[in-house]
Image 1 (cartoon, rainbow, N blue to C red):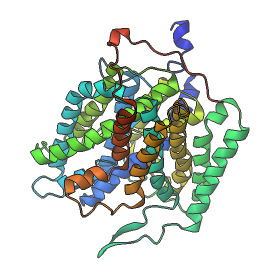
Image 2 (image 1 turned 60 degrees about the vertical axis):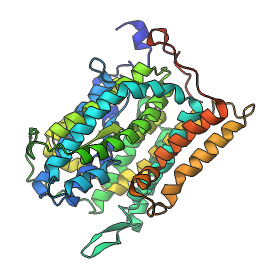
Image 3 (image 1 turned 45 degrees about the vertical axis):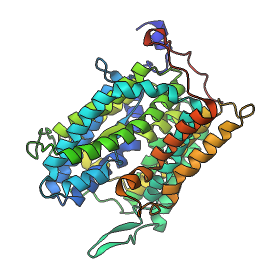
Image 4 (image 1 turned 90 degrees about the vertical axis):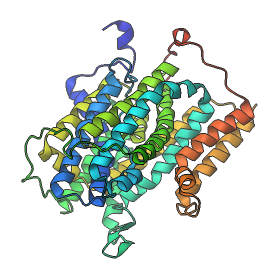
Length: 463
């Protein structure tokens, strides 16, 4: 490796123990969300326990495989930046709607996932041409919105789960929601991360989130709040069987629904990819963005074949990059290897899945807050003094994006297609920021050809 490569934070290699520890930290940050989706979908579709366990293992395996493709790259797929890929919450409603159709079931879900992957793969190059419509005023606003939107998820994790759960006669209040013990552990994890960040030095400071989660997990175990049921019966090694639910059913409307969801996720991924590019001092060209978005499509195709769902960039891991300052793509690739191992070793996966949500919730508040803080950092490069119209772009975009977050029932009486669009605060905020930027600042100039694009010099570390 050349000297120029070794000084690049994206290409920096660490000793194997450090790579493992830093990669494990990325895994633990996204683990709860990655496991939650197959559990939610499996329960909603009333799948037997063995199939739900298979979904969890398949999901972890695919998360790792797609992360490696994104970070390392294969041909024109993968952006080769420290971006962690995980299973997407956004697609859950569409997947459940397809899976509960007795004529489609899981084969219909798998067909829709594969079909949406093909669509994303074909659309990515054209989507990449929109990069010029995402200058810092738009990218920073989108990252601010993503962090604020995710905060509700982190707070619910810290409170011990969702405020409403399914009962025998419909949805009922969750009696465990806001339990004092859950809130106390989440608070301890949060405080531990802050203290470790303040007082630990060097490499240990980079592990603050991992160590904080470890503190919370140890407290939960000591209090007898952790169940390791299923570990003893789980296999030591599991090979993921392709198309375990049978041959996919390719039904037009289920594929169309998931393609619409993937369009939303490509918008979200675009903001996160550009933010990571800004953090690492890399200029993201149209071709770079297309390679990153192609990974979403390839991830869906792989996920469908291996019995799981849709994949996208994980925003909480973008926040972790900002906290640690470790921008090496090889750290993220190591996290991908760990996820593959977890997906292949069900006993280890069961233990990891035993971490209570409130433990991860304490860390999530820091992570999601850092996503918003990253948006603020990007916005600091925007001229608000000589161009006060930029203030309106941020103010209106954030305000519109928060409407479905603070009032999630407000659009229920609108037509279903319009309600689905308006229900995504990130999508509304992103479109608002891009359109308002055109209104106030004009149509951005067309990017030069890829051959003329140069990587920017690495940005200085934030004070």
